[in-house]
Length: 229
Image 1 (cartoon, rainbow, N blue to C red):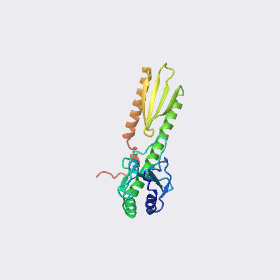
Image 2: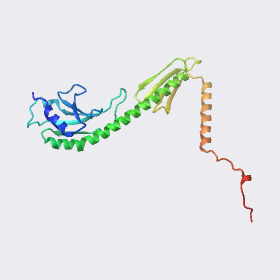
Image 3: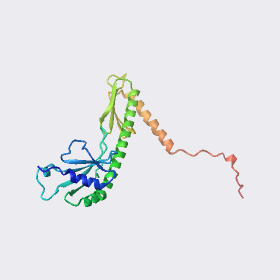
Image 4: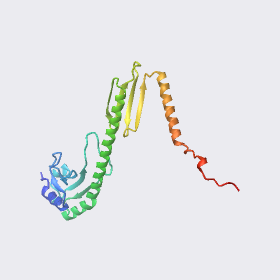
């Protein structure tokens, strides 16, 4: 079985220059891919398909290499950008040409995608923290039996009993960054709903008053008005 061309790939990575250097594969797959890192979190792989490695290439170093990046990972949050760059090339080509192609066709696009990943994951974690804070506040507002938790990505769920009415409960889903809460009520006394509708009507009136707020009145007695001719 042909050996993985580590020495040639090491030469290629050296031609990329600082800060890129070879490192151990995070998933212990060094027999089919080599991991390259900048030492500050960013990294990418140079991979040869295992089926190619099971046979002798038709020409020296004639392996097809695929290059793709590794992105930040946070439990429960994944980078969803569809524009992740990836390139492929024949390792038999001159290494100086391959290094130039990687610097031109892959590294700038990968670094930009990595920055997008950092921003996206930061925004997701921040939104999740805000959803959790709203959920806990709702649970504290209804101290009867209840629970809260992240049921699926992007949704924090809160379930509480609405005592003293037997069997009354509320199932709430906190979405986005806590700006929206979907509420489903069960076994609620109609008289309580009347109070809820009254609250919504009051809030509606307040919003309308705020939207059409009239300017402050002017004291005409303080104005210097010219007499009519």
